[in-house]
Amino acid sequence: MTNDIIRIMKKVDEQIGYDLNEQDIGAVLRYMQLNDPEHATPERAVRFLVTWKKSLRKRDINSPLEADLDEFYKQFIKTDLEQSE
Image (cartoon, rainbow, N blue to C red; front, side, top):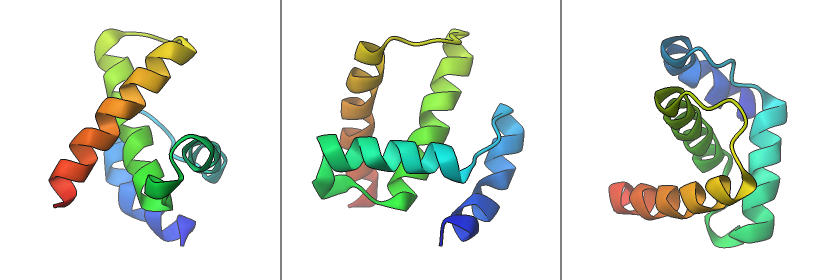
């Protein structure tokens, strides 16, 4: 299933210069399972990674703080849920 997700997201990867991979998806999925298990899905992990990387590119940040990640995740879930309805 993860390989299918990666294949689908390749076009986006090329646009933002990020090589989406199973290791990163797994790490985000573990983060989600620990912090927000209700919303933890591989598809949402991919959407989060792409959104997060786009945001970092726009802000030209290479090493964001963990607090930035937590706040960004909360905003992402809110927006993602609204778009899923």
